[in-house]
Amino acid sequence: MSPSKVTTVDFGTYQNTVNGELRGGKNVYHGINPSTKEELWPVPVATTQDVEDAVKAANAAFPAWSRTPFEKRVEMIKKYQELYNGYEKELTDLITKECGKPRQFAAFEIAGANAFFNHHCKLKMPEEVVEDDEKIITTRYTPLGVVAAICPWNCEYR
Image (cartoon, rainbow, N blue to C red; front, side, top):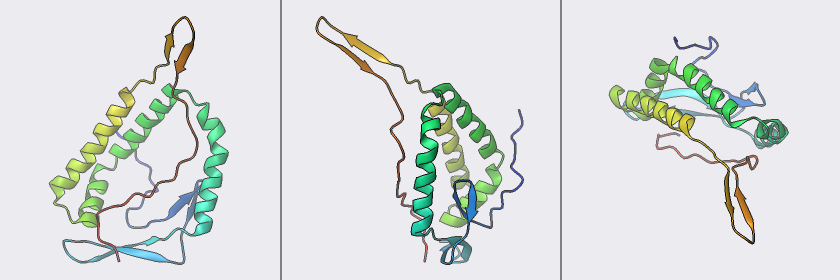
């Protein structure tokens, strides 16, 4: 099966996505290529309203998502991986510029993400039942809700 590509991806223009809507911003940051000190593309800074809207949309989507069977989620990860693999060269170029890495190390990072996809698609989430004369304990994995994360990165920005 050959990798698919989404024809609308532009690796020189960046926007925030909130509830499927692309959003720019009044304030932007520019990354700096650590190898060349070249200023990179503008990236919009999310506003408080962007964050509030994203959390609201995620909370609205959660009930349906929490009922999505595990097997369907794995299928969705595999579909995303297929799309991701269609952009191997572009993603390698992006990491090379953003982090100043030699191309071979950036390509290794892209391959590493594929290893994570493969690992997570092989995971099982079995229900475990422990019983004795007094009690029954059932352990099952269930979605808990919306999570926010601040993901630091080691690239230079100004």
